[in-house]
Image: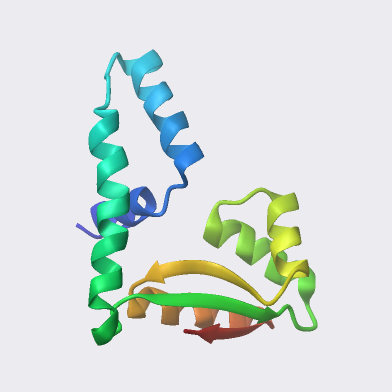
Amino acid sequence: MADLKSFAEQLVNLTVKEVNELAQILKDEYGIEPAAAAVAVAGPAAGAEGGAAAEEKTSFDVVLTEAGGSKLAVVKLVKDLTGLGLKEAKELVDGAPKALKEGVAKDEAESLKKQLEEAGATVEIK
């Protein structure tokens, strides 16, 4: 069950580019034609619901404020946590303060913060 939850979280956090690549792989390799309209509608609808529930503060932003002393470890961790390439992860860390992940659940935000702080970074949850 935990593996499915992890898989679902990975799907929810895909970028538009990654969703398009996934759709192409499903079509080319498996002959599955994903319903593009359903994917396009599901993404914005989830974001709108998160905005409506902002009063209860159910979605949080994880903001990297400073890389700290071991910048290389932080870059590697950011790369692993976000799925970015090494260059993009380095640019994100160099450009701190920057949002690392936006609209995540409180538990996930706290987990990300803990991991990044263990690597030496300074992190805020907003």
